[in-house]
Length: 256
Image 1: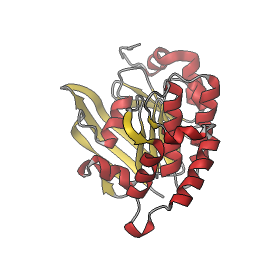
Image 2: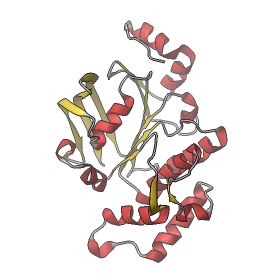
Image 3: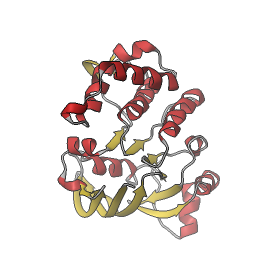
Image 4: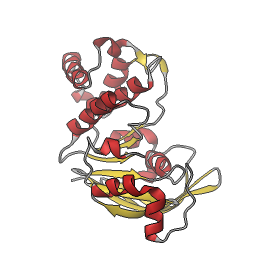
């Protein structure tokens, strides 16, 4: 079992306090959904875990598989088994999807254990079929000219190919129609198991109808204010964030 542990995390971005004592423990075998209004620190949490340069950590710790994450460079975090699917994937001309994926897989392997071309192609064909992706997607330049939905599927393809221990999925459902949402959800569920854990950051219940979380956490004002099981997301859908804040006696400004 691998554990990601976030302890009393305080984060600034451009001198503005975003996270204010964030605590969370996630184990492999678990799916945690994080929900909350805009501007409350959800994406900042993802950036802090992966080491984005815009994030200034002023207090707190992040531990992963016994390692102090804050002492690792971004590439070291990825090699250790952390994965981030971002809201707005970058376009990288000149590098094909297939080239990027094979290099990413091999970056996490020892020199004598690199994936063979035959095994790679077989695995790629299998994972692309799960996501209903046409074969030519493998030879297109990474995210170049992709629609929003194609970019999101491509992030999940990377997840399935790289097979990290732990994934942070930052609004992977944003902008997807119902058909694309079902395909993306199918890919996430394909990864579920004892050796995989995930934080899913989302605004909406609809994704959680397809990927049932083990835990749901509501974030307001830079910290978790309420946690529960999957039913908490349904309560949120009925009451809204303001309803939850009122129930908790919180005076939190809502940024829509």
